[in-house]
Structures are given as structure tokens and as C-alpha cells.
Length: 282
Image 1 (cartoon, rainbow, N blue to C red):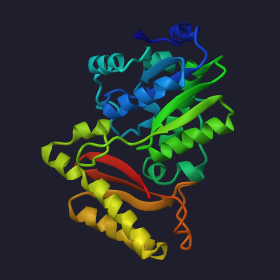
Image 2 (image 1 turned 120 degrees about the vertical axis):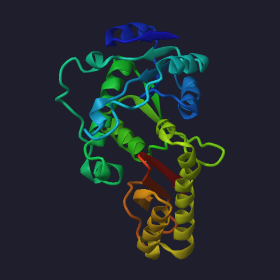
Image 3 (image 1 turned 90 degrees about the horizontal axis):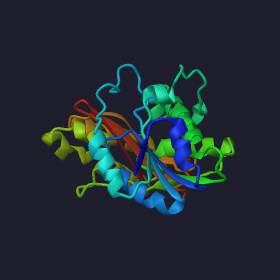
Image 4 (image 1 turned 180 degrees about the vertical axis):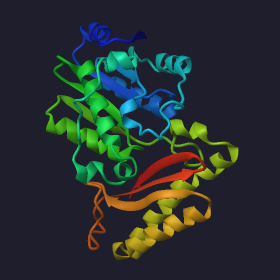
């Protein structure tokens, strides 16, 4: 595995190849990231991963400075997974001057759910992903990029960004990888102490219960069912931001007569000081 830090060196490494397969990460890798790498490899003629903790998507009160950085372990895992090129830019490499040009996704998709509770988050995500795409795929006739479905709204925003800018990149969603008890794998799970880790699975269970109730009792009762799901988590000591059922197509609330349309249950809640997100298609 070749490790490069500058955009010039990255492009030199990728010059012989026509179709990169790419997985963007912020490091602190877990089995979910490695699953994305394994799924991405057959989609191109060179496997590229990036590690970059993107300051643009963190609010001032969030955990940019304390976000786990596990460089040596990450490199070992990527090499063992068969990654060909690791792009690990320093902040001055990716943002040599203030990034005043930014990608602003549409408010109807980016300012709901995660975007409502983390204002500006998806502008930061979209901007860094666009820049990483320009680094990895510049001059290439095609490419593929894998993104995990645990970040459901993020995948939708990136896919639509690629469509609207006519980028020759296939955005491929990877299924959420879970621990044996059902907890979605996440870099932030490492913040949980032992008792919190045992409790953390209740988020996925709450989403499953909400989805089952919505299908069984009808979408006309959805507002009450969502409120009840929030109350159940709150009673267990969580601070939920949202537990909600949305249409997969656009993440808007479903119509009360559309019980047969594809839906997804999404949730975000804080357990102690750790904020967890998850989703379940129903």
C-alpha cells in the first residue's frame, strides 16, 4: 500500500489507472469501514482510501479536536484489506487557503433530520467529498465510491450531488455493519463506557419497534408513535433528537395512505456525552 499526503503525489500514483474505487473515511477505522473497502475493490482497477478529519463538518462545540485518531492501526487494517493507495492529506494539503467556495446542498434535504440538529454539517460534508472526488477522479473516465448506509441522509445528499454535477462516479451504498447485539458500528462507539455500551443497542431496538408499530397501526398514527418512541428512550436516560419514519425517496414524512411505499426509520440520540445515529429500512 502506497501512502501519499499531497494531491500531486496522489494523482501521480493514480495516473496508470482508469477507474479508481474509493472509500472516504475520517480514520479510527472499524469493521464497517473495512467492509466498504472489500466491497469497493472489485468496482475499479485501483483501490483508494482516504483518511481526513474534516474540520468543515464540525460545529465549534463538537468533537473535532478529540475525534479519535488511530493512524498506525488504520494503516495496518487498510493494508491487510488490500488497499492500494491511502490518501492522508494534512489540512494544509487539502485546504491550502480558506475554503470559501463550498457546496450547499438543497435545504429541503440538508436542513432536516441531521441537518436540523447540526446546522451546516452537510455543507461541510458535501464540500470535502467534492474536493476528495476532484483529487481522486480528476481526468478519469469513470469511478466508484462506497458510502455506508448508516449515514443514510449523507448517502442521499452525495448521490444527488454527483447526479447534478454530472460526475462520472457511481455512488454505491454499503449496508450497515452491526455488532452481535445489533448496535451499528461507529467510530464514536469508542466513547461509550461499559454500561453505556450495553445500553447503546436500545437505539436500534427502538427504531425496529417504531417501524413495526407504524406498519401495524397505520401511518395516520405516526406522530403519536414517534412521540412514544422518544419517550421510551428518554425514560432510559437517553436524550433523543429524533426518531422518525420517512420516505426513502426523499426523507419527507410519508402520506397517511402510503403504507406500501418504501420507508426508513431514522434516529439520533445522545447517551451520556456520545451522540449515536442509526436507521432501518422497512
